[in-house]
Image: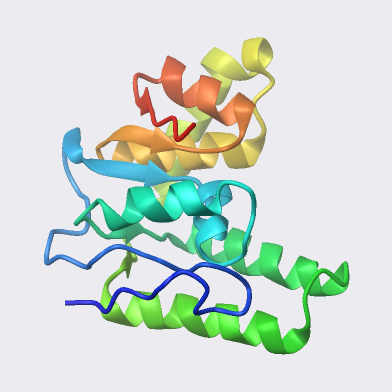
Length: 178
């Protein structure tokens, strides 16, 4: 059972993630218990932004781990590093946040799903052919929605408007935390 951190424990912001559970690595058909978090939602657990409290509360109310693919890892960690480059945070605070991500991976709060990246890219191409010319989807939007579909996610949490439209058109329920 993962330890829940209290809001404000991390210098970069509230890192209040949910409890880990012993579920499968999100493989199979659509499952009502799988909510896919886009990187724009995950970052709010490790760096304080306006929606941080709402995302943290949503995660605390869930017992399911958060899928944290290699794509998430690159996007979230790079986003945090860019905050140092932009002088939004110190290197010390960056290290604290990256350490919390690693701790959450080790404890099972964040779960590395079993994704076949060939399938992800193939499904992203299908989405691109059918939606990009209408919705203006970016490549990362397509990769996240394709990943969510492969993981069987029924719900999708993002703060990216174009990505939300794409996920909705792909048949997922959009989570609104407003």
